[in-house]
Length: 349
Image (cartoon, rainbow, N blue to C red; front, side):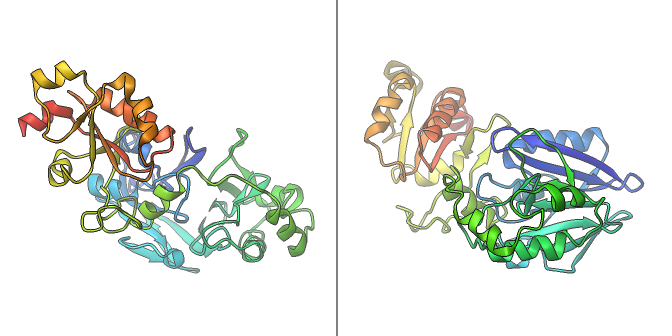
């Protein structure tokens, strides 16, 4: 079996590429939408065919790449049946099997971080991909979505700690530069759930973590319940209930973008900001009704905007507007995107 561990620096997320070297069939576990081009390039370099993308759960800190990978390479999206997600090709539950080439993965339900958390275990029990159930010297948190410390404790002890001690644990995240561990190590050394910790002790630890809310939870969870692609009517509290928010796609640099067609459909009904200089916008043409706010003044102007309100940024080619969109996202704007290709693309279409 070919195995590669990949990393997203912004969200500390591990993505795993597994492949049957005989058939060339492969799966990606927990792909990140921002790393789409990296993953597709690696598949091409290694001569692999992606047949499945597997999400261990509906993530709160990043958007899955499952939906866009399905569009780009024809892979099937897989997620737990108890996740509440829609639009996946395969819904798995405890005891399900997934086969690609000569490799088979066993599904173990490990709820507690969320209802739909699953762990993928190779048939020989040499490898377990635990998502956010069990980390290296830690566990997933239990204070949002459908979190339950009691359920997570039982999941870890009944579904993961029952594997052989030499089973390698590949976690969904790591924040300290560690890459993998083993079942035996975590049974002895995990400060939350190992070394004989009782369920009551674990629950007390989890109840007192006092961690900040994930920055992208309001965007990531709705998207991940639809394979990373948000349908038009799925955003609760949307100021445009008939039209909804856009299906965002991110560039390899992480810039959130919407299509020319989406902008055309929604112009006049949503805040759109042209970040070029006024004389540039006048001479080269602009979209009717769009506000012209030069790039250097957007930060100040945005202080008066509602951060829940959708905002589209526009420039000549999409480069400046992309940078502005990223900056506004860092400032807390939750529905922000750049018009792909800018006015050059708009005028050509």
